[in-house]
Length: 278
Image (cartoon, rainbow, N blue to C red; front, top):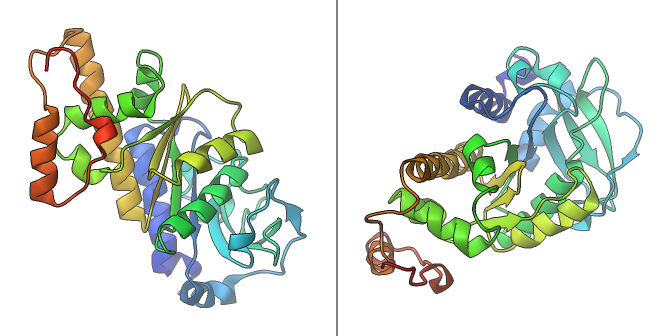
């Protein structure tokens, strides 16, 4: 048995490959992180090498102090994760203050965790608290149609949420809390990490204008499914807008309320505003 036989490692690799097959990870685009469960840490501890030196995260995440994460590497290609996980990803440990990390496994040919590690960890901290500890995955991808929409729709939560909800009946069931939007910012730094983590207090997904999307979930399947659903809805909207600037019919606010009742979800009224023609 090797570390590659461990279930969470296999799930991590599969999500990376699924994202690559969707066309969301050109070159070294995108990143993935997983907050490892204590029992899983013990399962893989035998594969850890001598710890690397402590390095600054670039932000402080005290509520994640002492935790372990599996993370994709900076400059690494998602298409290569399935071929050589030990070169393209790593397992890191955070110190007792949540300010530094060290590598315990992976990046065997050198390198460091994703350049967007501050964003990942700040969002992990937020989602850990908001979900009562159940959320463990943060996934960032360059979702083509979502990016396209950030050039033509107002960069407002209520607009993106409503437009995407209208494109597929399952959308308000899959992401009933809606979706947040961050205006364009330089990626990889603390500012965009702070802006995203503020939105993630409310939502499980956030769009980065002209860049891509962040999604959070309790496991790999749920998180990938959320990203996939939003991007597919965006694809339908892009096709709809290319055929006509106006819709002849759509899902109405009352339709959404009826759907919420039958599927036992709560849809915020802020997204169910009356639009012209409804």
